[in-house]
Length: 402
Image (cartoon, rainbow, N blue to C red; front, top):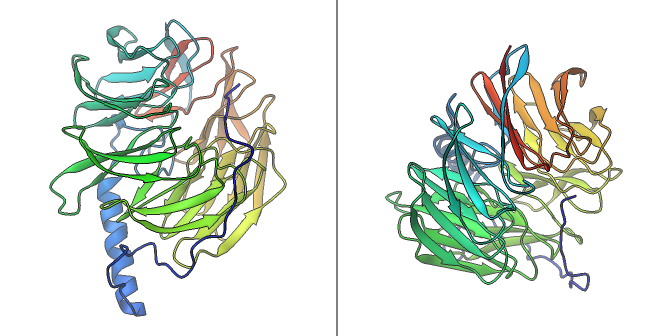
């Protein structure tokens, strides 16, 4: 079972009000409905560029920088197991796939690069367990370790480009954004030392860091000029990606163990008390929330009309995106700790019952399942004609056309 470590004596404080997260601290905020509309349109266009993915690349745990957990690719109608690859220990890291290579971490302390056919290309010794999901960006793999290192590794040959040492374990995936002048890229990640870090992607030099009040478990979501993330201190934070200054923070009053998804000025996320939220990041108002689930330690998927997330109560929930009404529930036989992925008009999810499920997005009916026989805590990577998943038995599994 995935362990979420949080201090139990965390102090919950009131959040800062009347701060627009779309504006940088210390700058004048755009006013008026027309200007805000223009800014939103620019943000959506920039988000599309930032979040681009192809049929041969699933570059991060949630597929894009806003953490939508969605692919346009339709899963093959009939899937069969093509191959499996065994690492030396349990796998909690989710695989990513770009070009002809698959990348995944293991509790045995190695980052693995596998071919599309399931053969080992190379492995890198991180000297500490890797639970975080790798990030593929411009031929470099960025991944954190429980030893507190953020590693930048050449995706082609496994050589270390640089290493940055934080002062706490790194359990969540890294993410990326452009610099203010759009000439450079920067990598963001959270650590158990309470900090969110922003590094120069090429050199590994610290651009800024922002201190929270407790551990950061998840991956920061990124859109326009802001990054949004939660942690064990019970706050949802919005921080300027260019200077690390706080836009605002919203008091949720309990642990946020996983990553939010953000879209069109709204954040979608669950907490450890089994509550799920849709929050307006500009007004900081709760648009809707749902309170009757088990603990959420996975991240949501966002479609045009629906929000999906799995819970430790074994249920995959499908919410109406606008109203928050439950459209359907799908119950597995084990805790759901990995995140769902929307693929076309279907949903993929792994469960603690050791099965992968393919579910119809509209109805919530099961279309296919496969029993691996070992709990799955990872998110499934989706590319054309293939899906890849890791499991607690230390294996990476690849499924494709019959």
